[in-house]
Length: 132
Image 1 (tube, rainbow, N blue to C red):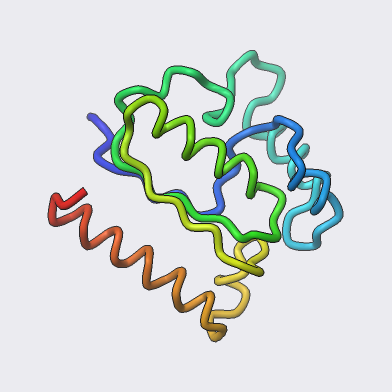
Image 2 (spheres, rainbow, N blue to C red; image 1 turned 30 degrees about the vertical axis):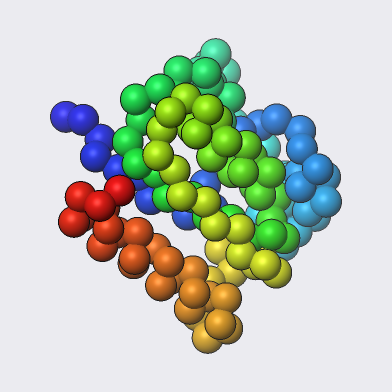
């Protein structure tokens, strides 16, 4: 079965060192320690590469990506979107100003949370209608 689309909400994509990894290493929502634990759980001692470290991205389906501007994953998500575009894939990227990792799930009342939810719904509507 072929994947028809990807809706990636503040995804964990790369282990690479980046400014946002250092800026938010002690963040309470997702810290560098959480990140190391997550990668060890996901990959273990294998040689598998996370999506953000792979070069074989050509042919991936339309992808929606979002991140908070104040989260550890921000730079990896932006880099992944750029890599998708470079391989000719369709990608939509949102970086929510002031958002931390999964902030829209912590409190849905701020405008930025409502806008994140609206943007995801709109992308899903366009994807289901074949408009991407």
